[in-house]
Amino acid sequence: MKFELLIDSTEFWPRLREDILSARHSVRVQTYSFEGDRAGKMLADALLSIRSVGVDILVDSWSKFVLSDRFLYWPKNLLDAELRSEVVETRRMVARLRNAGVSVTYTNPVGLFLSKFPNRNHKKLVLIDDTISYVGGINFSEHNFEWHDMMIRIDDRGVSQFLTADFDNTRLGGTLPAQSGSFGDIDIHLANGKLNEGQFAKIFKVIDGAEKTIQVHVPYLTDPFLDKLEEAKRRGVHVTLIAPRRNNYIFVGGSVVWRCAKSGLDLRLYDGRMTHLKAMLVDGDVLIAGSTNLDFFSYGHHEEVLVVVRNKPLIDDFVERILNRDLAHCRVADGAARSWTGGLEDFAVRSARTLLEWTRPRRQ
Image 1 (cartoon, rainbow, N blue to C red):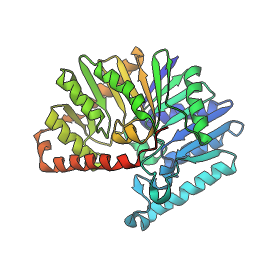
Image 2 (image 1 turned 60 degrees about the vertical axis):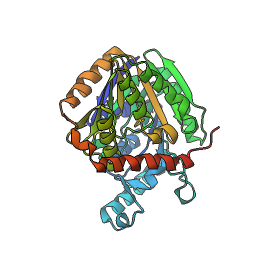
Image 3 (image 1 turned 90 degrees about the horizontal axis):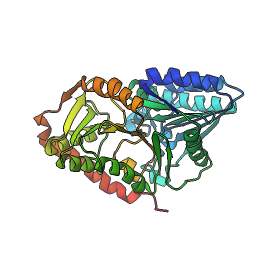
């Protein structure tokens, strides 16, 4: 089994393009966002160039309603000529793929009056020739390509076959029971959006077992994960959180700053571009990654891929090229976080979580 840590689209896309162009019989792509901009078209062009290879793309229905991080049917956005042009380009790109024989399937319909809108398939996967797997947080849209993020490339037939079974079932409209698999240095947990508590309990077990340090790098941390990290701090574990200083979801960013100021968590605000990276390192030897933002959407509503890695070379690479470098570009959150606005933002996040409990998928 071989691992590669790919940081940002500048490392991810050249490596993926090389694998796509070398594919012998199959390429499967699953993404939350697939947009007719530079990033989406680069993927489309690469896939269209491998005519003799079977290609399947799964896109969550989120992309039918949100492009460039904007809800298409918000009144202001209806009049945005540039955004409407991207809608047209996305439709043309998908039509071009389908006309060339590429299967493009939109998953998770949003329901009447968007009643199922919170219940998304949030996985980001690329599977090539039943051997190569990519997991992580990068979508195929230009703004995601510009954000700080990571993917893990895994060269292992067992991992690929495990993820392929889930991909194919999703493509056919099914929902598998929550599943887990162990493959040497990596455990994979698939959360199906209906029984996520059991899968995330395995992540909580890792957190509860921390003895010295937990270092978290996520953009949208909320309860119940934030609760768990506060519990770890109370029993003496040093918890460091890296979060974007300029969060694209303002209320969540303000809530995190507020909560960390109150609980004493070591919050570092990443300067510069938005960071969309999703990772947690426990005691320096267990890396949790995948598609989850460690927020209440992941916990109660989203289908996710969680990976727990114990491969020392990969973890050493993560520490050197992500953790240490990013901490050097952070500033420590200051006492201004205790302002009344932070409390209001935290109240808004908690209220949203409570309201969304009513939309949770029926347990099966």
